[in-house]
Length: 580
Image 1 (tube, rainbow, N blue to C red):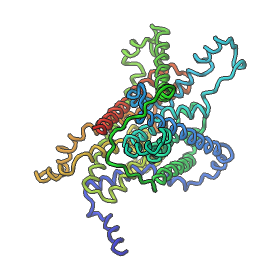
Image 2: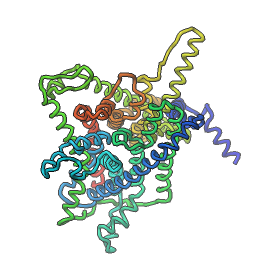
Image 3: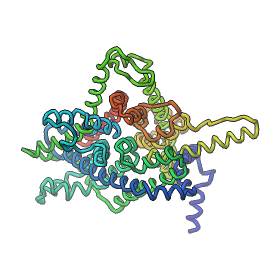
Image 4: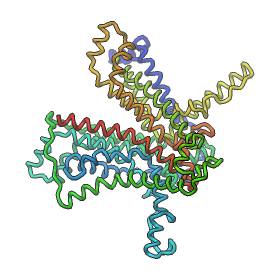
C-alpha cells in the first residue's frame, strides 16, 4: 500500500512532467474552468428565487425535459437502428444511395426545421390553405389540424436531425459484426427478423446506446426549437432566469440541475456497456444480404426515404421556395435600413456586398474559422502529449479538457461569463487603485470570450479526429526520426503533421460547422451588435419573419453538408476495406 501511494504521489511531481504534459494540464484546467464555475454556483444563496421557481415553473421544466428525452430517445433509436439494419443487411433498390443520404439531416439544425415546418403547416401556410380550398372549409372551426408548435412537434423535429447519431454507430456495429455468427443463426432456423432481434441487435447494443446518449445530450442542449415551439425546458429556463429575471446565481443553479441530467446519461451509457462483452471472429467477410421482395421491398424504400425527405428534402425545398418568392415579389427593392433583406432578386441580393446578410455571414465565418483553427492546435497538443507519454495524468487531463461536448451550450456560456467577469472586475479595481485608470471589460462581451466558450464546447470534436489520425501513424516512424537526430517538435512538424493532413482538415471542418450552427452559446455571449447567421435566423423567426430568415438558414444548411460529405466518404472507405 505504501508503495502504491508513493507511485501515485510521483505521478504529480513537477520533475516528472514534460513541457507537453504541462501544456496538457494547463489547457485542461482552462477548458474545465466554466464547468467548475457553474458547480461552485450551487453555494449561492438564492432561496427566494428558488421558492418562486418551485411553485411556478420548475416542475414544468423537469417534466418537459424528461418527456422530450423519452420521446426523442425512442424516435432516434427506432429510426436510426432500423435504417442502419436495412442498408447494411438487406438488399433493395436504392440501398447504396440511402446509406449515405441518411446522413443528410445532420446538415440542418433542429431549429431550422422548426421554422420551415411552421411556415409549411401553420394556419396560413400552403398545406392548410390548400386543404381549405379543396374541401371548402372557411375557418379553423371547420376542421382539425395538428399543431406543429407543440411537444410532439418538438420531438419530431429533434428526431429528424438527431437519428443519424444512432444510425452512424449502429451501422458501424452491424458492419463489424461477424457474418459467421449471423449465418449460424440462419442455420438454426432464425428468420431475418429473429436474427436481428436475437443476435445482431444485442451485439450492437453498446454502439446504439452510445449514439442514443449523444442524441439525448443534444436534445438537452437545444434552445431554438423548444423556445420557438413554446416548450419550456431547462435550457429555456436558464435563459429566462439569467436574461429575463437577471438572476445569475439562480441560473447557474438551474445549470447544475441540468448537469445532473447529463451525469445520469453518462452513467447510463457506461453502465450499459460495463458487462457487455462481444468477441467477434476475425472473419467478417460479406455474406449474401437478405433480398427483400414484394411489399417488404417497398416498405424498406419508404422507411429509408421518409427520414431523408422529412429531415432534409422538405426543409430545403421550403427555404428555397421562400427565397425565390421573397426575392421575386419586387425586383427593384433592396435591403432595408433596419437590416431586413427586403425583396430584391436573388442575383441582385447576392451581388450586393453591403447587404446585412454578408455582415452576418462574415461574422459567422470569422468566429468559426478562429475557433476551428485554435481547436485543432489544442487537439494536436493534447493528442501528441498523450502519444509521447501515455500517463494517467495526461489521460485524466484530456478527459477533463474534452468534457465540454457533453455539457449544454447554455451551461458553458454561463460558466464562462462568471470567471471572465470576475477577472475583468478584479483587474479594473486593481488598475483604479494603483494607477487611477479604468480598464473596463477586457474579456467579457468580446469575441475572445465567445471563441473561448466555443473551444470548451467543441474541443472534443476536433480532438477525436486528430487523435484518430495520429494513432494511425506507426510508432516506428517516431523511433526512426529520433535516430536521425530529430527532437519531438521536429518530429511533429516534419513527420506527423504531413501524414495527418486529411485528419486535421476533417477536424477543422467538423468544428467549423458546429460553431456555425451553435445558437445558445452565441445568444448569451456574443458582443453587442455582433450577430451571426444562427442568431439572425433565430431573431427573424421569433418575429415571425420566416421568409427573411430563409437565406441565412439555407446558408447554414449548406455549410452543414461538409461534415456529411466527410462522413459519407469515410463510410465508403470502411465498406471497401471490409470487402477487401
